[in-house]
Image (cartoon, rainbow, N blue to C red):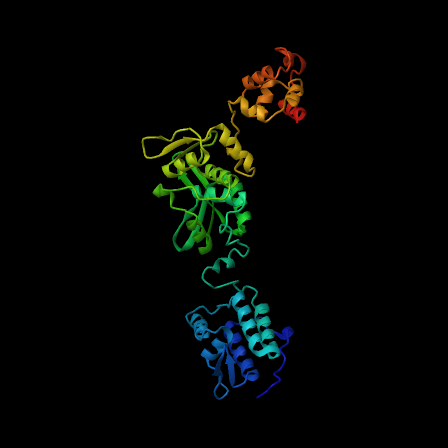
Length: 398
């Protein structure tokens, strides 16, 4: 037996190095460095007969699965001549051989390095559940395993409204092109490959519409979404997931609103009555769920809850971020001091103070009267600051 096999020179490698050649080179190198009998995982095995290392023994050496080489050969024989071994499998083979052969495995590691260099298009993984890494190598597969940030809760809410979970663990998100920035943010936050973002045109009654899509397959994400309670929206059984804090609940609610809420209003109009009932119960407000007569329901969140929801998470869909005025003097008094209001009424008009604090001018005037704050006479601002823009008032107020 030759104990000193010829050293492999990486610089001398040819441009082509197929998987079939690699397997045979592995076999030939191993015959020269392994003894006829080996103890593997507590079992003594005879490795070769008459200088022949059978596929089953080679497979067991590499991965402890005796049919692996047979399967690789079958793939090649059935027409997939360009079949490549995945990077994670190569790493496992290398680790297994080093654990058995120690320093003698240097020839094998050099051979594996050659295979990697000559095949720069190796898949990352061929394992079930990890094949997605070949297309989205940076995907955060455990993103929804634990909803512990407002960002995750927001996306969970948005997916509750918009995502479609198809066959074979496919996740599809389709949005109008006017919301493409949200698709881009979703891609970035989940570590998806933007090259797989696509667009398509659909003719509607109102004209041609363009939609932006990101679609991928990930069993881990689908499993976690279902564990959190996702059901197809068509069943009208969507429910509110159990989260750990009010801040996470509010972020989820905002994501759900950005998906299913009405732009310019603080109102839902959806088919699932159960989630609307849970929203009412969870956030304790009095607005009623109103049927529309065709199987769907309306629910207004009210200005107070809606504004709190916007303040809780700032990075939501811009076109749906509209603050509403709250008709409550108590809320206004809680958000400003007498000293600040005394100065503010002489810097900007009351109507602009009310806009900054999302309330009504009447509330500001009533608070001034209650706190005995002197304010300008009527028409004071028209005479003094005619033509000055509100942005300048707001800058002075801040």
